[in-house]
Image 1: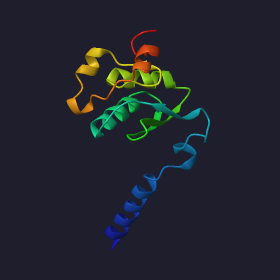
Image 2: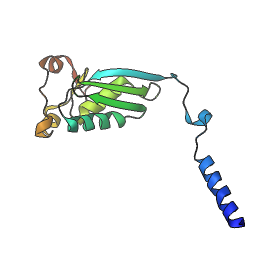
Image 3: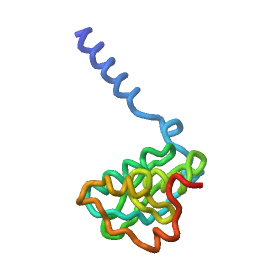
Image 4: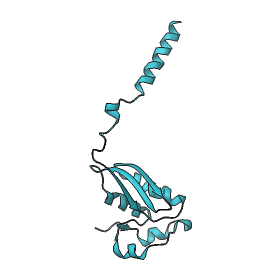
Length: 133
């Protein structure tokens, strides 16, 4: 009987210790957090994975979801850790043109054939390469 009650108490302690305290686990709501939408060109599910992975690779990005039909990446990030520019540079480096940055020809040509989206001539003319200042 003593071992059963010890087991129950141990299980209870383990369960309680696994529940995060709201004061510790959560950031202050809205403090330094930014929600934005970024135009990102792509075509398929592989593009979606690549775009979202590139966004999440940037320190401070909390959420990222790319909508294939609208060509929009909805992203939430901490402004004290990153910027929209850094996120766009990371996505362009991965092979996708964004509102303000384009990928280089070599990276674009190395995309899988189903991922080669039609490039917008206006974006190519007006935007900077991701690796240029």
